[in-house]
Amino acid sequence: MAARVPSTPADEPHEGAARLTGEQVSAINRFPDDNPNPVMRIDADGHLIYANPASAPILRTIGVRVGDPMPVATTARFDAVAPDHGFVEFVADSRTYAVWPVPITDLNFTNLYGMDVTAERAIVKFPDQNPNPVFRIHWDGALAYANPASASLIDGLGLAVGSSLPTDLRDALLERVRAADRVMVELESGGRTYALLPVDVPEFGFINVYGTDITAVKERERLARENERLLLNILPEPIAARLRGGEPLIADRFDDVTLLFADIVDFTRLSSTMSPHELVGVLNEVFTVFDGLVDRYGLEKVKTIGDAYMVVGGMTGESADHSERVAAMALDLAESVGRIEAAVRHGITFRIGVHCGAVVAGVIGTKKFIYDVWGDTVNMASRMESLGVPGRVQVTFAMAERLRGSFELDERGLIDVKGKGPTPTYFLLGRRRT
Image 1: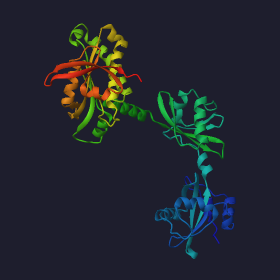
Image 2: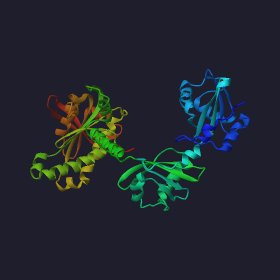
Image 3: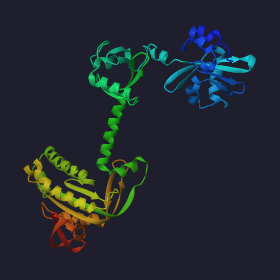
Image 4: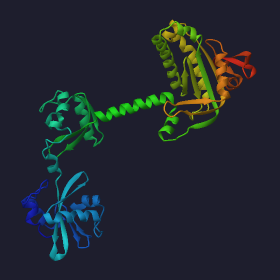
């Protein structure tokens, strides 16, 4: 039979402790199996030798059954509070329990008396010193309480105690509560960004909302995204990931890629007629359109050098149709120039050349680094551009062989390529009609 709880836990309140009322003491003294509050017993060796049904949530949290030794850390917590008639708190099944250890020295065991203090914890007055926003709302969205740290948030929403939250904010908070969803609700108020966690307090019919100012976090995230965007403007994503992973030297060989070069015709003459601001503006407008095409076709921009634009396909794990995608982009690129207002205004046209084959690629530099490609394939693609015709896409025989099934080609004939001699080339006309 469980011993009676001494008067100390019920009659002598401890800071932060729940008080046991006379009615609760009487309940504890009833036969333990019928007790609505948790009652347990441990022997001198620390084994759990009894637990009533109401103790089940606590036992699941501790991870023991009757007959098991209590965890050393748990018995140490009880030993620490026993001399002062204190209690240990457990959170189990979303409830909070206060458990008092009461040694029964004559019988060489210790009784553990528990009480559900969830409601008491919920209605404890919010400390005014809390540095984080905390406020309370009713289910109709009316603001019932706000601590001083909530002032900027509440003022930014134009609220006061007794007024109603904006409908969208109220609905978002209530939706989280109904779904028992612990995902935060983000809110912009008073020039700051807050993450709000609503917690239902069903015993009293209101909702506590715990806020955290995440303005600095969001700014760091924005800067990280901007840094990532800038990094991916000069490096393919897999290469950027390898650099972030600390790989000191990045050098790879690719046996089959497709390269495209595009270059403004007679750029030197054009640039001499423009101011620096106008020249950069025109290049930016044109190359922004090109960048969009690169993204659309899942390719990689290697670099721009002055008025030259270089694209590669097949280097970052894309599917085997990279030659077709580069060809499709080349046709779109040639056609898009006629829709760019700055290009039309200045009469800008491009020569475009495409070739396929093996390359070596790597990152050069440690501070102002670039990702570049080298090899005979690069040289040949560049020659296809420089020896091409304004407004047209010139490809090599190797490219033509790959594209014959899906694109229309026009044989140009032999042209003299430096270091290669007479070389057969073709103009890419468009997709083959099915």
